[in-house]
Length: 371
Image (tube, rainbow, N blue to C red):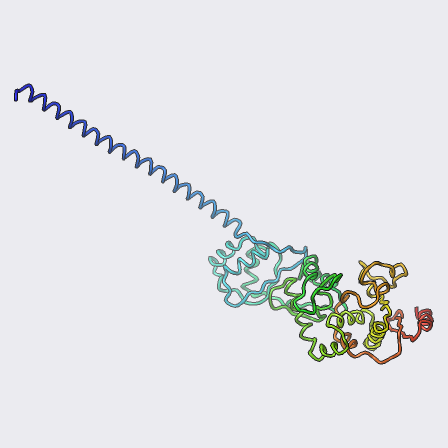
């Protein structure tokens, strides 16, 4: 080959080699740029994730787990039972959900770091809403437990029970009354038409000590269970023999409870009511009118006897729709074992002693004398 042609060939090969190298370099540089862009995106993504996690952690530590908190009365205490071996985490969540503290997680961490997590004493504690964590921890470690007792007198109606429990800081009155409308764990408590509260009459009047959680449902359950346990099979059988359902028995006993101040009067009043039911005479009990009123009156008026209500036993024959109060055992026994008399009327004097009559004329004469 001629020298010129050989030089030309070498020059072309050299150029091609340079272009290939430049291409490889460009490809390499492009890959570096792409990798750099990818790493920049990843760095930003990681940075963003870290910021998001930090923000979430901040919110979590600031506000803790969000719970639905039961509405509380102004003076309502918050009772919490701490069981043996209960973890600080579980207790923190519980205290937070009940509104004792704001942040359950913060409580747990503080208990852990300050060495209190394993020092909680078991028992029932009384707290207030939104307490300082330090005070809560101090109570739990020192074992500042409390005994939760309350007494419901015989003859208290649902409204009076709710007021008593609210006064002692155990329930929210409105919540208790709302739950009492349909609270019927036993068949005989099934809400009848026109009954105001299904629980009326079946929350047994007694002194109770709470050992578990304190709330309206738990208290009603405990009181209803007490009633059911006290209503023996013999008593149920006796009511059945008299063609009285449990609902009728307790309704009638509640009237006796409200009418009688002294035990000796209970079986006589029960007998009067049973006789009136038998002959189709209205019961005409002032106590059923009082049940309809916002506040009790010393004496009902003629106008009161005209109140339109199924509970008005002046206007309606038979029993009212349901109990008007929680009767004690003596009133229930009085209905099951009434006196054997010919009385059809009675009236109480200002001392609460009842006077009985066989005829309406006798009754009017006694009323003039004792009232």
